[in-house]
Image (cartoon, rainbow, N blue to C red; front, side, top):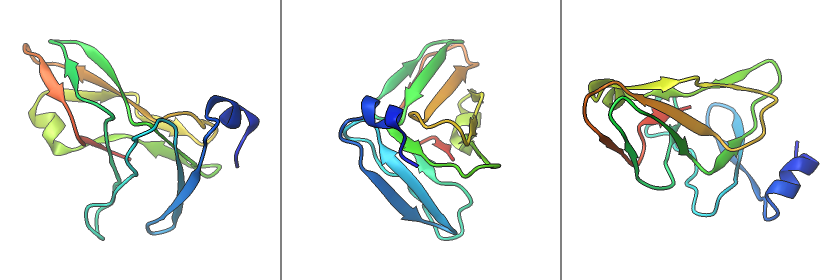
Length: 127
C-alpha cells in the first residue's frame, strides 16, 4: 500500500488504521493533522478537520488542507460531503470525489456563494 512516491514526499510517514464499520487506513501527511473522527456510532460519515483557519472571500474559492491521506480500496471512491452548517452559510463543496488511485493529501475545495467573507475552521465536511 505504501508507494515510493509517498515515502519520498512524506519521509516521516506513519500509516495508522481506524476501525469503523470496516478498517480504514489513513496517514498523517502534515504534522498536527487530526485523525478522521466518527461523532457517533450511527454516523455515516467521518469528520475531516482543517489544519488552520481560512478566510473564504466573497464569491471566492478556497482549497482547504486536511493534512491526511486515506487508503481507498480498488473499485471504490471517497466522497467529500458538506455538513448542513455549510449549506446554511451558503458554502458549496466543489469536486469531492477521491479515486482509489489517489494517495496524496485529502483537500477540500469550497465555494462561497454569499456576498460576505466567511471564516472556515474546525470541521464542516465529512468523508
